[in-house]
Amino acid sequence: MGQPILEVEHLKKSYVNNVPILDDVSFSLQKGEVVVIVGPSGCGKSTFLRCINRLEEIDTGVLKLNGVSYEKEKKNISKVREKIGMVFQSYDLFPNMTILNNLLLAPMKVQKRNKEEVKKEAEQLLDRVGLLDKKDNYPRQLSGGQKQRVAIGSAIIRKPKAFLMDEPLSNLDAKLRAQMRVELVKLHKQLDTTIIYVTHDQTEAMTLGSKIVVMKDGLIQQVGAPQSIYDNPVNLFVAGFLGSPSMNFFRCTVKAEENNRTALLLDDAKTVKKVYLDGTRGKQIADRYNGRHVILGIRPEDIYELDEAKKLGIENESVDVDEPVVNREMLGAEVILYFDEQGKTLAVRLSPENQTQVGEKVSLYFDMEKAHVFDPETEENIFVS
Ligand code: ADP
Image (spheres, protein in one colour):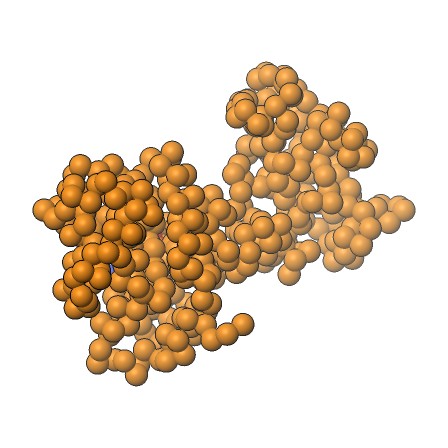
């Protein structure tokens, strides 16, 4: 890998009373990457972007653009901002200017570029995002999605080294958001851009990012490719945050049994329920946790009814749910059943042929090869950490 475009080393930032909003955050961005920073509202995502763009002063840490520390550019921080384009959730368009003039403004006024050259570029850009016929319209004549495309265009035309996007799609309705996600992926490919994208929406993170950074309370929890984090979350928070419906969690007691089998007894169950971890995973849990509590995590798609369980060869131990189905969501390509279990909602994703209705009881089968086990104190994923 070459020189990262952006490097953040041990960044700390607090607003009041030295309460850290960002606590020792380190991060690097390679050319061409789309890094999505995802986490619940208030975890410090916007603050992080604002520090990178120096809209906020930092307490300690080092920030580098193309290997050069910001400190060296201290007197001229606008130079740093010029190299980093920012797209916010509000569209930032000037209402009294046409779409074309909105695009021309920064390159001509700030960057003092040649009008004809920039105009040609702006028209090409509008053509690419399907808005050339709107160039003489005003922002109020455009839909939300169209305005957002212009806003992204006005960042692109400044030719920044990297884009910072702060929840740019959050003002759009669900359908437009999905369309814009596709557009952004296309734009990224066509323009070979580098993007840091902030969102609280885990679906956006999973679909857009070549790399995801999961944050909680100002701390980076995990960095990696979307699928790899989804399959191997390092802790309870990451496991619960990525995926919809969320991973199901059960408090369990570990019981080593004969034949190298390790049983997990689901606590608080009305009838005795157990599932088994076999092989090295089972041994690992038995060695460390026999007689103690752990938290079992299983995703809705790793739970099956008998027919499918048989096909997978995992029909040995069923979990008979005490309560009947409380909700059934038919989504076309899948059906999601919801149960009350251990006082919480248990979600199960099944094939759409499944005919179980609200009010009916079922036996479920867990694909334990896919299960995760968490330490209840440290909340770490025992198999990953
Ligand atoms: P996110 O983007 O993840 O929702 P923010 O970075 O906006 O989170 O905020 C992180 C925390 O910092 C929140 O607790 C928020 O209240 C606090 N915060 C943000 N901006 C300021 C500010 N200018 N002054 C004081 N506290 C702030």
